[in-house]
Length: 172
Image (cartoon, rainbow, N blue to C red; front, top):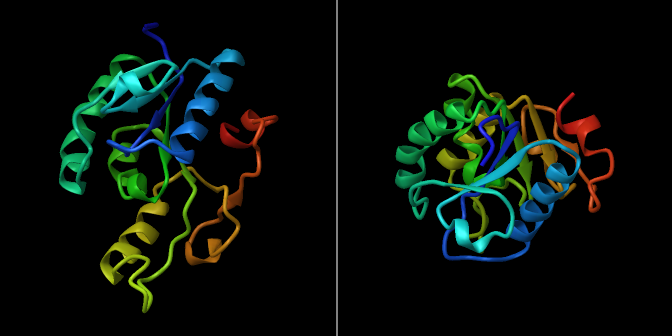
């Protein structure tokens, strides 16, 4: 692996494979094709068919928190400048990565909502933590235009399925 990388996409998923993982894998491939050296940080590097950096288990919030500082050290060794936090389950780590000197970009697939009568959504504490954490992002993008007003920061809708022009919006 190259010692000088530009971008790391943080994958907070473990023992799951779906649309979000396919999306970031395609984004990683595209960015590398555009000569932006990009890797995915994952606890399951063999599940992706693009460059990865192995990290400790992220199966729980406690494990995500405990592994984030060691991951930050690893990313600094590779001279990574940007970290893309994939979805709400990693957005709350934005303050940690920002305070470690990274440019932080959040790429949201799900929308932020308080827990509803059906039990879907976030508790009040989680909801407020995610809103607070968004303030530590240099940019917040959502592929879902619903409920973006829940955030106290500007959220740009990111429709880019083929990633055309991705660098004009992500890294300016």
